[in-house]
Amino acid sequence: MIRLPRAAVLVIVIFLAVVFVLVGISKLQGPSAMRWSERFARWGYPAGAERVVGVLEILGGLAVLIPKWRRAAAAMLIGLMAGALGTHLINAELTRLIAPLVIGGLAFVVYASRQSTLEKM
Picture 1 (tube, rainbow, N blue to C red):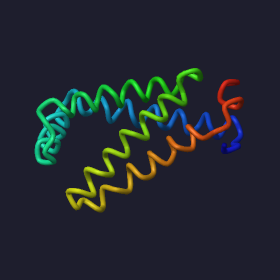
Picture 2: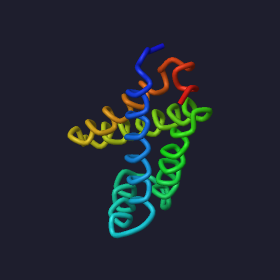
Picture 3: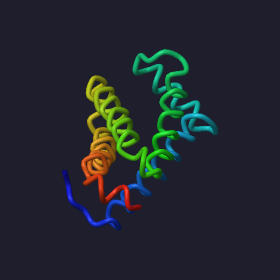
Picture 4: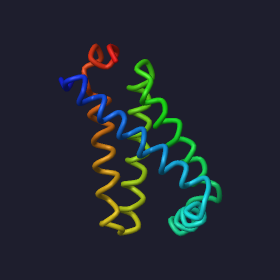
């Protein structure tokens, strides 16, 4: 387990929540939703997959704020970022690997943080 100050964990958790909720919303509505739909189709995913991923990102982003759900939410976010990494690797989009690596790494830090520290928040 990783030992981090409560404040550091809280900053990472808030950052993850904001990022995942905003990106999830962008997959569901607005002009960027159409671009996400086109990208997912180009990557070979079925129609509507971007909406499923968007909903999971929003739920994970919100759940990571709840101490009792934090580790499970972080695990789900790690899984989503692993899928993003695989997608970008398979499609040779190497510059797009940075964001899922960083965000997935932060989700891993939250997941691996000492449980007693997380429950006190």
